[in-house]
Length: 173
Image (cartoon, rainbow, N blue to C red; front, side, top):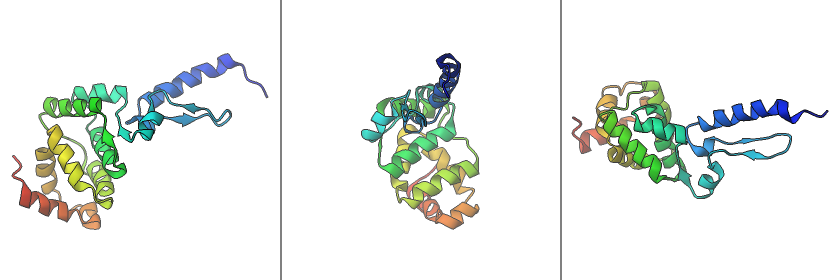
């Protein structure tokens, strides 16, 4: 069966648009199952090769506007669990998020727990805490999650250790 190239093009652009809206470049790729070609509009292959965690351009701009707090946490998570460096432009945008949002990372407890569990399982919570401090959201996270230590995931993954660490090493404002 042969297809007209023109009838496929609108779907290709829709795919590219979808990929560009993903959280990080490493998650913004697809493979054409017919040609085996990799569709990589954001440079994800290069970032994977160089072990760089980079937010897509759309998310980088939204971070600067104080938007997409859950994706900020995902960038931190991917950086921690894979040991990747956060790209300079992404880190700058995350710092801007911290300023614009006045340090508030407002997400649901479920979203926080989902990402934090994965960080804790790889024993990289200290790196995550350092990143949170650098971008200016740590005090809010510490204060917010100290009040919610009875969630199932805190008990399940040992996140009470995180709470104890916070109590011993910080004075959230």
